[in-house]
Length: 248
Image (tube, rainbow, N blue to C red; front, side, top):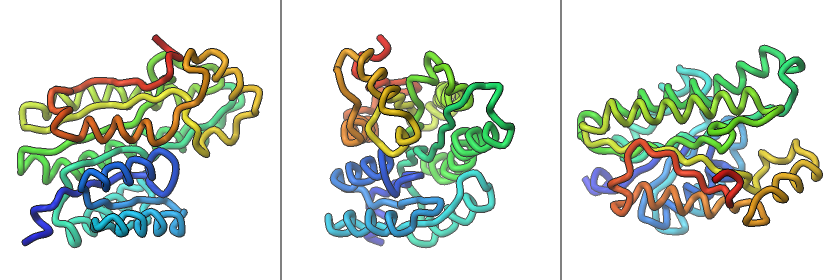
C-alpha cells in the first residue's frame, strides 16, 4: 500500500549523461525511479545504487525503445514492481553527424526509430495508466537543432523537430485529462553524445554561444525537475530551450 502512494518516474536512456542527471535530480525530489538502458547495464546499476543511497526505490530495465515488444516488456515489469508511473521522461536518443548524401538509410532509421518511435511507444504505454488516473507528466527531450536545424545533423534535426511537434499535439490531446506534456530542447551539453565531434567543432559551438561554454547535464536535469514539480503546473505544450543563448 505504501508503494502505491509514492511518486514514480521512468527515465529512458538514463544510464549516463542527461538521463542519469535527470534520474538523480528526480530522486532528490522524492521520486522512485526506473532506469532504462539499451546495453550499458553496469552504468545503469550504478545509477540505481546512487538512487537507493538517497532512500528511494529504484531498479533498471534493459530495453531497446526502438523495439515495441521491448517497451511492452518494460512497462509490464514497471507495473509488476511499481504499479504505474506518474512521470515519463523520454530521454533516450542517438545522433549521427554526416552529410545527407553520405547518410545511409540504416543510419536514418536508427535515429528515427530511437528518437521518434521510442518516444511514441513509451508514451502510448505510459498513458494507459495516466489517462485512467487523470494525472501525469510527460517530458520529451528535444534539441535546439529540432528548432532551427543543423548542417550535417539532418536525421537528428528532423527527429527532434518531430519530438517538438509530437509534444505540442499531445499536450492538446491529453491536457484536459490532467496530464502535462512539455519539451526540453537543450543546446550543446557536455555529454558523451558530443564525443564523435572534433574539438574544432565543439569550440565553434562554444564560440557562438553567448554563455561561452557548454551546458552541464545537471542544469538540464534541474529544469526537468522544475517542470515535473507543482511549480511547473502551468506549463503545457511548451518548448523550453536552455542553450546559453545559442539561439535567441
